[in-house]
Image (cartoon, rainbow, N blue to C red; front, side, top):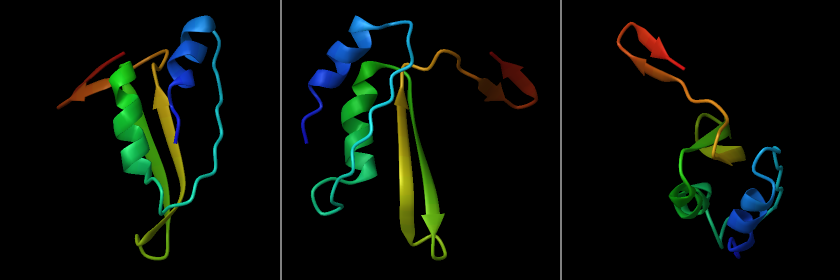
Amino acid sequence: MRLKGVPMLLEATPTTTQTIVREISADLETPISVYMKLRREGASFLLESVEGGERIARYSFIGIRPKAQYFIRGNEIEV
């Protein structure tokens, strides 16, 4: 899977949200392996929906360079 064009796309439009969709075969890449490659770009997250008693992830959402971050430590929240 080629990810080299993603950083260039993000730098070309730094103030615009970009949506990149790609369906891939699970035997070539996993959500974790793709996330590990993209997380080098800065703050990032991986969200997965699960189906079948937490055995199969149906959809995975990976985001990098969020516009805002929330930090929760004990009873304190920082935006």
